[in-house]
Image (cartoon, rainbow, N blue to C red; front, side):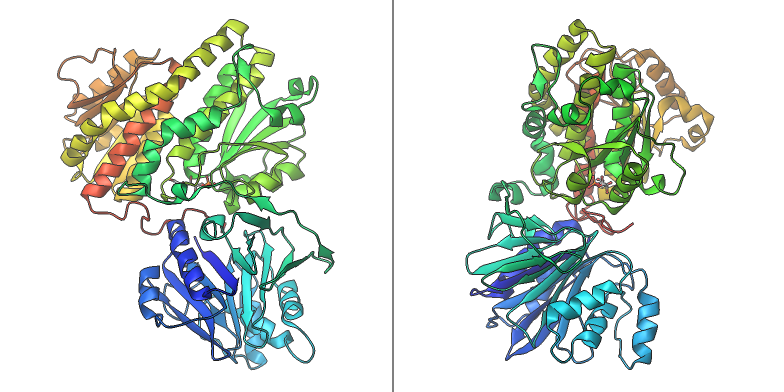
Amino acid sequence: MCGIVGYIGGSNAVNAVVEGLHRLEYRGYDSAGITFLEDRELKTIKDKGRVAHLVDMIPPEIFSEVAIGHTRWATHGKPSHENAHPHHDCGGTISVVHNGIIENYILLKELLIKEGHKFVSETDTEVIAHLIEKYYEGSIVLEQAVKMAIDSLEGTYGLVVLSSKEPDKIIAARRASPIILGVGDKENFVASDATAIVKYTKKIIYLEDGELAVLTRNDIRIFNQRNIKVDKKISSITWDEKHTSKDGYPHFMLKEIHEQPGSFHNTLAGHIDAEEGTAHLGGMDNLFPGNSIHRIRRIVILGCGTSWHAGLLGEYYLERLTGIPTEVEYASEFRYRTPSIDEDTFVIALSQSGETADTMAAIKEAKNRGAKVFGIVNVIGSSVSREVNQGLYIHVGPEIGVASTKAFLSQAAALFLIALYIGRKKIVSYKEGMEYIAELEKLEDKLRAVLAGTEKKVKELAEKYASYPSFLYLGRGLNFPIALEGALKLKEISYIHAEGYPAGEMKHGPIALIDKNFPAFFVAPGDEIFEKSLSNIQEIKARDGKIIILTDEGSVIPEKLADDIIRIPATIEVFYPFLEIIPLQLFAYYIAVKKDRDVDKPRNLAKSVTVE
Ligand code: F6R
């Protein structure tokens, strides 16, 4: 989704901002733009299309010590030169880049037009530039004008402002849309996402809602909502550069699929209690001191997209290991129902990016109703990680491919740890706990074996099946969320229609779709419902459907039942999803490659969905 980057200091700001924009490309966008200073005036270059196209338009000899840039993901107005950011006031002396949505922009625009302001775009952002212009007069300095302007705004913003009248400063402000500040040596940075500036500095300040920052090359001053100067902690980000390169792989997605044995290891690191057959979770100890865990009457899991699918696995784990009624809710729907949440409800919020606006809104709603909220998050210091009461980082490193892969596996693993932690205090015996731990410890190797043992075969199958227009993904029990996630991966990156369905539900409707042109991908390991899955496969076979079966190495599949079989190592029932997801990710990946899709940046999608 939209990305922001800004630089002020002694080096060429244009280069730093362009580099940052390239690094933000993974978020998904349709236009890009930059404002810098040329002969004491603001010069803006912007257009729809890729950052590479923007770079072609920037004269190579340009040198400016201050610049702001943006990648836009259209919300108000189609992708075009006019709608691309930065936006300006009438006089062209103020330049604004903005993430988020200004809800009262129509009203503000009408008022400003009546006052004589001229608008050139369809965006909500342009009103901010004109509002600043309105207040920026006499002895008012830029930060004061920005403050007056944002006080009139309803909605969300992460915004950065530059003025040719005071080119020695950049102003940044935030309400519900992330802004981070990068602290350098005689230079400072601002961005919507640390990825944009990690090459230059690892020292980061997180702006909180309501705060406004004034950046010069030598210092950063931050003011709270009441205009009082605040001292902020400087955090260090630990990412290393390797995480943001493809490391020899053709795409980030393939690299991230291959990283899974290591990222899974990182998620578990420090959380396994092999003495007691349980999980060490400091955040859970803090959230539920003493015996208070026994007060939980209900568990609600919140998330969107792939995180919601991981939540479905969590539902199985929590109900099975704790006996506590558990539900998974789409975060985007949660606020618009009347959720029955109280102080005895334990809420778990899942978000890779930690910036998903729907998930943030749902967390706030749950907290308002008295629930304790525990976050499972990847991006350190992200909005979700700061909003929840306690949490757990999955530590998978930056996930750059828009389609989530390694985060899904680790979210599922984290949910299992929580289920085991609560379960051991309730219904899981020591012996059972030890069995889970023993198998968990073998999974890293099994994940490696899945990658080594299935990739070649899956690639061949992708070649064979790439021309089919639709796919069904089917599974029962714990395999159903994997079917959903496999279907989501395929549609996201290959643009092939795919549906995930509980295999037992087929006969209640979707079986009508089956014919020889509609392949069904069954996720059916040798678990306790394997025989029932085989019956569902027979139902498809009897209707001439093409069948691919993903199963374990020991399960016997009747002869001629499947057109193709992919086999993974055997594990215990609860852990099959961890192994199953890899071939499904690879299948989607290789089909997308075969169809020549933009795998890491699929059309219309954004990595970090910061609008509701
Ligand atoms: C799918 C995908 C999305 C995200 C969803 C939530 O591959 O990446 O469906 O899972 O937008 O994002 P997070 O987890 O960042 O809250």
